[in-house]
Image 1 (cartoon, rainbow, N blue to C red):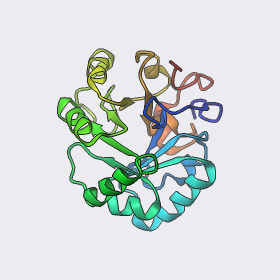
Image 2 (cartoon, rainbow, N blue to C red):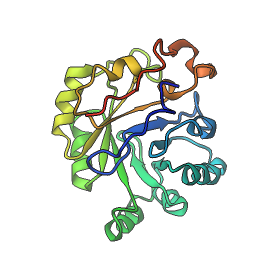
Image 3 (tube, rainbow, N blue to C red):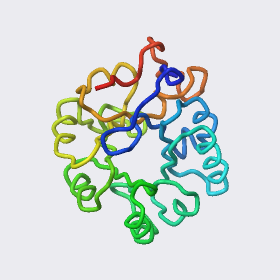
Image 4 (cartoon, rainbow, N blue to C red):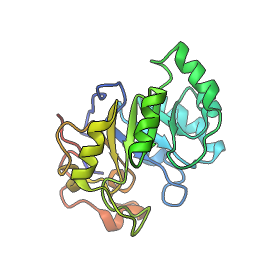
Length: 216
């Protein structure tokens, strides 16, 4: 874990957390153990988590002061009292009821949008999302061989965002240093797992005392 226990991230300028743990159906299907090591105020983005695990994950997040963001299912997000994360290239369900609830209470019902380019940024702007997860910032194990944005193009796209831009893809202590200081946060899977975790063995950071994200 790259200093997550010492990191106390304030929210970004639009109220979203600056440190995100991202689950994955293959590499981290149950994020509860990893979420237990996050600092208060961080976010857990539940992607492809089995429905039967979600209530326990929601309880854990409430108990530890974490923000739960549920990917692609607005009705489930409403039931769990979670935020909604909209994928960029995958369909989502229950979006309209969630947006209606958000219109009544935008502070309670957070909304984030995945973006891989300008179209995702435009959708986030149209929906009034609190922030975007802009990816892939760097080469990532989840999409081997896929071209990454790199720090310069990531920064150029992030400047076009109408809200907070959080970097996703290949994020760890080293890559976080390559982002501009004004970036609003980082999201990771392997970069936020304990070094003993089977997924993180190949990506164990060499300087675990380094804060994973520079404070602007």
